Length: 205
Image 1 (cartoon, one colour):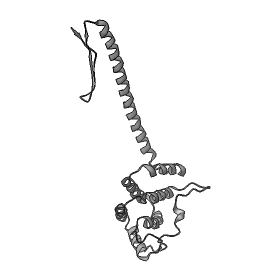
Image 2: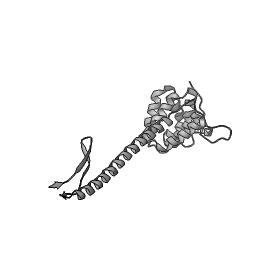
Image 3: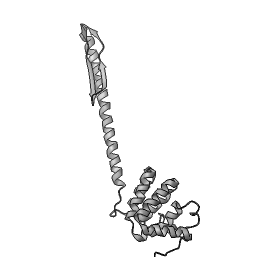
Image 4: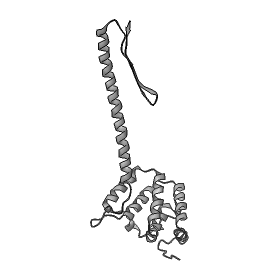
């Protein structure tokens, strides 16, 4: 007579654990020893499985928490928003970066868009025209100041400056098309700046 115990664990109709005791012929003592070993193996497997499930769940919660942390809030202090943008600067893909720039541009006031124009030309304009066309815009950068933290707009501009260094010309051209579709006035101003080559052209007509 063959004494044998088999344990099978399935998940989503797929076998993920299959273990049998050693064969024991009319030897209850041997069968008991084998069952103890089987119990130990099953417990180890289930413990590992549960731990993996917890890790997956924790990682998901961390990811969701990070997404929430990256959302802007006008109610938060500027130094907190600055910290968020430092995180964003290192984890987002180029396509995600471009989407953020378009979203931010839609939120900016007309004055902020005009402040952004020179910087946009410098970083995303035609390659043969960007050098030397922009002057006097350093103050818009997200610099460390002892008296006050950078504004939300400044931090977004800084991110744009950092991100655009790694974009392809095609990605820059696509961003330009998206922005022109949002604001025709900005588009006209952009073309006039390129034609005149004057960063101080303030003709808004």
